[in-house]
Image (cartoon, rainbow, N blue to C red; front, side):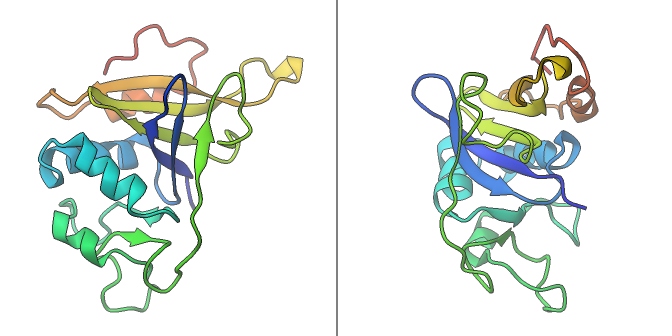
Length: 188
């Protein structure tokens, strides 16, 4: 089953734009993977990370999670990114994007200006979003502010992970925050 997400960069003003990520977009999977990619694969360079994950792959991702290995993808693996079927012998060896390989789909841009305009980011459809910033990774979740009032779903922040931290954040805590009515402190 897929847990749909977005990998994004901030826009000027309030909001973000990014690319779709299909499988395992929970904080315990994609959030953790993005943190490891930043530290291990992209040598703590958020601009290089955003370039590869958001700008160089305009149709988005099936998954960035390593399927057959506990280690993260290396930088050179992204040169071979592309969609492969399950029966392909190289399936899981490289990141699976939708713009290269067997799919070659058109560009898809997700934009978010929540809570004022939730139309471009589809908060019902995109359950988790991760915004790559110079200071850290901002995790947002799809949330309904008042189910009885007929209001639309919006994306709201649930965690901020400072890039400078050396230890793995508590991604389970970020995931649990999605169920809270109010998140007082975003820091993990």
